[in-house]
Length: 380
Image 1 (tube, rainbow, N blue to C red):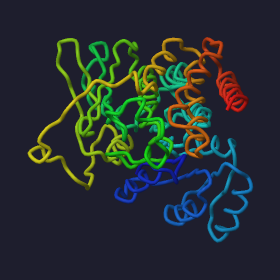
Image 2: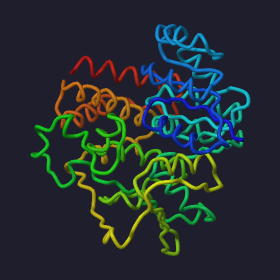
Image 3: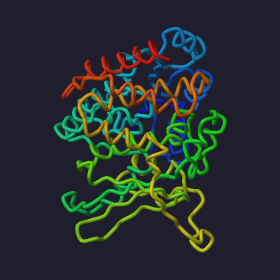
Image 4: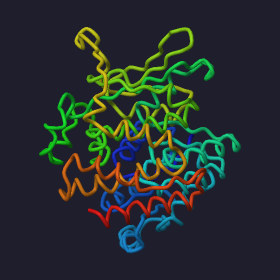
């Protein structure tokens, strides 16, 4: 029996994690945490019987306590609640599926407590990879990627020496606007950007896919996860979303992980690694698929990718600014306060305005995030 805790249980990754739990009686849920979807969270509590649950706002926690007063479950709130769950005795793996930099401190505490991390929170490594990866190594903790691309790389590296990596190929679908130019994107709105051709994801990550900021974040994350130079990470458009990523080795061999676009596969792989379990669902039919195609990313139109490489090269606190600026810009775009192309302008101006802090602490990372938010609000 493996015991897990899920932070972000009502989001896309969290709900799919619990679908995996339903199909695997060898998994037990000890703790859950969520944001504002209290109705779904209550249903999850009644189904999975965690001993502790956390929500972000104390007011929401009070309401949840009332709703589940017939159950033996502790309801905590805020960062203290997330940290308590992260270090909960008896938990083997923490599934980190919350969105945003609030994931950094719980991940650090979980590592210190000896928990393996099934990581679906990009911001943790994008902004604090220089802190997280050495800490995980020092505590003998595994960081198991849940993103489909990073899971594909992780799987392709099985049995291979990291020193033999020549190149990492991160694949991208191209999103809903693949093939369009800047002139075509002046009047696209959230309802257009949210129509991803292959994946069913949350709103934030779907917009990030449309701007290719998501792929930029994955580049930075891959740099930390697999300890490779940026020059050895390359993005290629693979519109069918069949090849989830590839690794090229020193001898020219390329290993790739293929599969249908189903996030339950990388989730389950992370939870049971190194064991593979049966997973119900559609299988690839290569005869019906017919072809797998590739394209160069259009970095003149989709600026999220070159901006990410620029942020990663400058290093220090700059990836934090890239991430924070995008987070606030996407929120404004979803509320139709700005246009699609304004997302890039906001990220670029925030980066231009920032003075890099080398090797930032957690406090400095969060400070850079807040300063970026304030700069945006003063301008837009």
